Length: 302
Image (cartoon, rainbow, N blue to C red; front, side, top):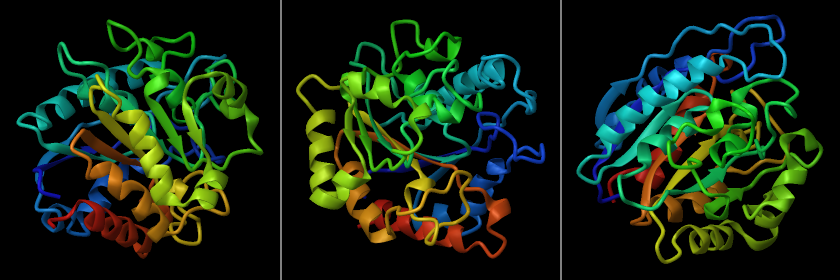
């Protein structure tokens, strides 16, 4: 990549439910684990440091509200400020998460005064399109695409003053494989203008064709650039097992590289965030090494 790359760490787990034994998940360890692989130097990037997360509060879900609702809102605003500062001068921003809720702060930070609302390429094994009322877990991470386009009776769906963080017509949802889990908002997704290209379509058309279709949607005339959300669970768990919601029959590393490389290298790409890698499930750091190598191949110096 010829553009400057600025790295921001988002070490947070407040957007995802605890493990079944009540312990908070350790996605907050991910930025450090990825940096330990030499990621900053390998990308010749500028490190803008971490945005420290508030503590986890809602270990037990209360009603139908999102877990840690106020904390996620506060953190999203802080992350947005860091992303906006990192992007100054036209840098491509790489955010190392953390759970999927960080997409809210990333989108908020990617907005520019007077510019159109950025689009969103959402690369994930799950649709994440349910509302707080529909969610089985209350995790913001399970509903963050819905929140990004303004769905849900929560302030997290209204973090921007002038409308949703992303317009549904400017969203491409790529490679999901959650057909057996309709509580991720499938009915609403089908009725929305989101471009939904699930894993079965990707396998039929190929990752490069799906990337082209996504770019056709994301770079229409008058668009304001686009952000890329990359959840590590889009990869098959035999390739990267250290994720919190593994789903079988995922992408291989080459398939994912062919899918995201055209996106990150497009001149209208604003940045990318990587989520759901949990170092506590990766004692030998095999998953960290594979994710770092993937990022180096698609973002490293040409």
